[in-house]
Length: 617
Image 1 (cartoon, rainbow, N blue to C red):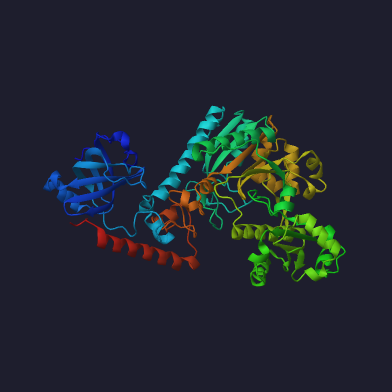
Image 2: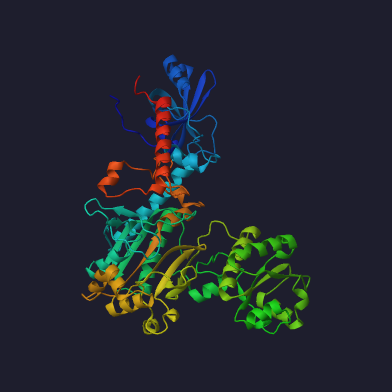
């Protein structure tokens, strides 16, 4: 039986302080260099690399073992730490090396399908199929460790501030509102299903009614929705709720949490209080409700300048109740040719814009397609509005308010990336407050809750719920960083009458409201306190702090863009008996597909066994 002796330290921590000491190390062989009379071995673990040295004076047995090592072999190394003759400044352990006295091979390794190092080019499918190998790569490990540091800081902060960590159920009841649920069939109640939680929203509100006062949880959530780079079917929320709290209280605690995370994880002193912007100002200045405040290039409403313009594209849009809005791109006059600008015009058509007008301002003169329509008064107004200095490209969108906002938001982000004005290593937070209570869903053709149906309207909004609900504003707030929504929250409804009016405004019938949420409305009649809360998306937050483009890079075992997992082959068909126990039968139209999947998985397993198994040896 292998005896595992105590490790002295991690390989990546063997620095000058260990010189002259005997050490016992474990790790993976990163690389072997045999120079004949000298063998160098790079030994790797989660903390980094250290160089192991074996020379002819170590004896033939040790030299033979060193020479037999292959990449990714798992080994134990004993030896003395000595100062290197040639320092490697690129390694944390570059001042030292370990003069080996014993090497024990704990496990051999076949040649991996890709090199275990950073910067490799390999498909995501291959990375996920061999995720246990991909996770050995330093950059991947560091992203997972960073996520762990966020979790540790979160637990410490909430514990220090008197919050109680309470787990809420994973198996709950389905609600047809919002994204699709993941359903879990019940064997005991055939035809009935649990749903995996999209969030612990109602459970945490009920905990406030139960008197727990300060709740938090690192909540696992599940949504069956189309995937993007910042989405996974399962994800984690940093979830909090408080009784007897207003917006400022929740925001203050959130800022305290963010301050601790930024300090502990990134070594950055976050300045608080975090600035605030209303939803309306955010839309008008940035074109969206998640503004990137790291740079300027703000959107300007130019409608007052062009309402009487001879350029009918502008004046006509304004006369029809629309707007003319624009942004100025510094140094854009030389950077952007007509051809490049035409591509931008095509780009914003996906946001329903009819076109893109533009002028350039150089050497005190305006040029471009729109320049001939500009009066002297227009020119002076534009120079003043944008504080034009020369060299700018000014682009305009004339359309409905929402189209102008969407188009210029995306243009602004594109121009910022291309002109290099986004500062590196900056994490800029902003609160977006004073949201509309409802938003119009073009696809559904009706008003829906901007956040969720349990958000408290402001005082005027409570009155508007029964008359003009679409004009109501919410007591809600989002926290945004670098143009991405990190999280959001609100004051919750704590009175039955307001909750019922909210459901009415959303088009619920009394029957439907009580079938889905009767327990909540009954609870609100049982002495429910005012309460509020917030949730931060851990995966997205970790992705941004790790400077990654995809949340799959900060999840240990993520799904791919098709919501499947190539290593375990999930999801996969199950045995007929399992389906029968649940009272489930696969429809005939899907049976061929299920059979094909079963055959494919069986073939893959058989090939794997034939090629690699030691079963019959």
